[in-house]
Image (tube, rainbow, N blue to C red):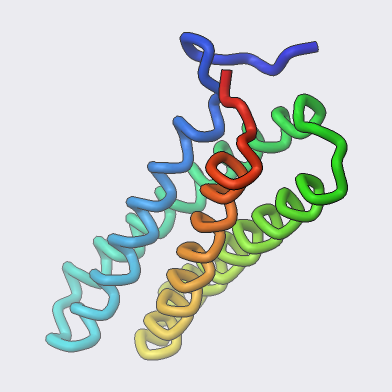
Length: 139
């Protein structure tokens, strides 16, 4: 069975832009709020993080729907596992960031955001390698 698609394109690459944008904004807004003590920026960072977490779940669910359609080669499965673990770890770190934001630990929350952002960059790179190095089709 073929997973649902939009005009021949899987949902996963369409959806990943939303958590990336939300978490990038959350990370930089939290750092800016920490630097100048602006509570409005801290609140905006929290809402961007929540948006990233929610849309990240949707992107991960869409990615899981694509798994059965991928080649069964060990190289591809290893690369998929790497991408999955990095993206899932980033999601988990941003969840920790949210708890720290809610408990008013701005320094720790900003540190978690920075760590999550690094993991997010590696996850994006691993996903790009699936398409460009392993030549996984998207249609």
